[in-house]
Image (tube, rainbow, N blue to C red; front, side, top):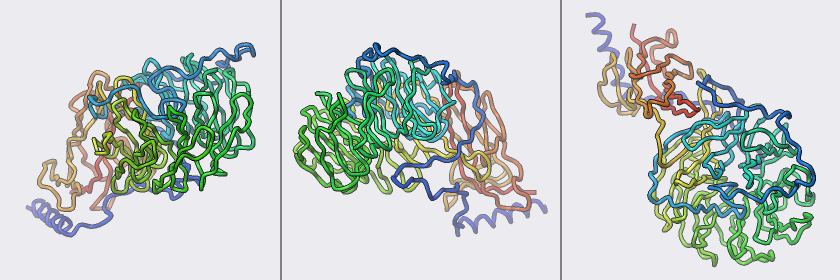
Length: 557
């Protein structure tokens, strides 16, 4: 009788709290104030790790894998790979335009592959569909989301997108010490490395020469990694250069806000154009040779091939992502809104990304149907989502938040219509501490590798494991205990599911039913506890999928 009275009393107290919700009842992750470096570069946090099953092939990049090529072999490469998405924004003109249709492709997130930290740079795709990206390590991933190989002994941060040449050699830049541009063979062994602090995504010309910028110069390398030239009079080249049909190298300068045209043979300046402010965005080049550049003076510029201005249009806020060019020549550039601009400089339409949505780094990717894909941040370090827009400027679909920090990566489109994009995500590793753990997300056709927490349902009250009623405040309330129940897709490649409370592992399930009973006090002498329940499905080959709930928890004596 006494226990029954106590239970009734507890429920009565909860009725009061539901009618008069208490603010700040769910725990929040600590957010660092200095997420953005002085020049809008994001700062990663200290990396920690959790155990993962069945590590895929992990390679060492130490110098025993380096193969030096002789000077006579400089011209062996034939330029960028003719593949699905070989460089940043698809091609060396940075059009962001794919030759593949996505109109009939399902808009479903099918898998997530974790990086070792945030995934800043954009993925690229070779002619076999293998996806490459960097995140404190360097990854090669098969289209089904399993790892081909991982190199984890060299990278501190990778901001840039890789580039793939016609022989399958992959080039990727590091921006932190030790900083290099590194060339890898398709099997993941190292070919060579060149010392340079690299934010810029490299591009490859028809002779196989590699061009990239770093905090000082624009640099050109031969395919064997030897210096072709550097251009010391162009300062702070953070953008990825573009290459015109005649081989002219186009780049922008952060320090001076200039656009430069560079002779490819010797690195001398052909012409320069000054915008009204700093420029970090990659230039783009249309089929008629028109050069498009977005500047922080709020304007999108169109330049003739000789460097004179064709027109400019105000796009409200400056962007650090390159303008992309659709199949009909429409130019797309985004910040708070996605602008579609006609080739004559008139605004075709403006698509609002949504409340608290903004895009500074992610460049639009465009399918052969003219469908536009773009990554957007939600708020200031709250989340990020993939937004899909029809060619007429109407919304086609949006993913909802797929991470808890943001998206700076640009999408890449594969031959089967799959869209890949990187994310910035933080994961609680134990109570009050987080680690940076971004993902490559795959949207499109194919096997789905996903886990869903079916119980507790968000916004419900549970007493002695039984669901009672919804809460007015939308909080999830657990009295005494609850069975945490999980469903998962693709059971054959599933290795196991872990159950966490505040980042601390509580239970491991290797086969259905995937269930665990939450039934203990986590803090002594505290009646109302606030916790984060997370379940993570680990798939063979490296894919992971997590689902979580914030709960208010009472463990009756």
